Length: 409
Image (cartoon, rainbow, N blue to C red; front, side, top):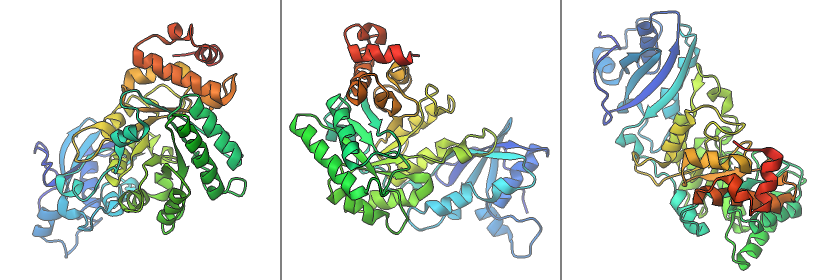
């Protein structure tokens, strides 16, 4: 039978899923590349009597390029399940047993491009960036939000007060943190009702805002919980995609009873995205979240804040907003150590179609939550107008106080 190596052959985006792997090995890299293609398609550790030429030719993965430590592998569409939108099986193919191969010291899935046959199995975001903008009546400026802080500890009324103060200070968005769902000190029903009343109060004052209630729970209960919080007044829901699974996002997005945007948090992603030589990069995950129907997704701070990974975060921005897939655009969310002084730098990299949100950068302001919200809003207004933040701060006290406390980049 032929080798898995097909070097020099062009990628066929209509018939194959194309994956890029960064490989670290003591073997000749061609041997390591073949090991990946074999393990993830038709191969095993020894010759077998049940593998015939037709199976090998039709279903075997193909190594089509090796450049430095980057290996490009094509997987035929027939390697993937005919079940519509089967992310678990997709991940088993493109990011499965290869991480345990003894021939590899390290391997990292850096990117994947799916053919139309697979893309068309998914519906993408129900609302997306444009839908969220319409709901908030904010067609051009970046969305600007907060995360209720402390992460846990506030009760329903204190949470609702925080949300109200944030909206009164000019923020368009707020959200639960990733660890808060339905604890005794802040029951989800009581919290949702209280926050909904705060947002209704803001709306009566001419302010539009949405708060994402975290519904991250067991897979067989997540749609039911989302339906409940929606009935209690939630304008947006949130799900922790890595801990809940891509299927949870997809179930929420495709259920006709869910009529609010889905904010997707990526907590725990660093367990396999942080190592530059082993694991899975954030880019494939971003693409999968958009496919599954996330309306907004955390992407880091593009090299600026505490949770930034590297300049490669720019590719996640493009994956949220690019027109190379048949879906609505997904709102990229920049958060993690954000404060007013770095808003200008984020906008310079991200452009205007972004949601910028700060937790401590709002709650830690000398004038409290409303003052922090005003400072963040002023920083966004300055960036939108193209006015240097230091100049804008001369006429805006809250921004001036934030720059004095935290500095800027």
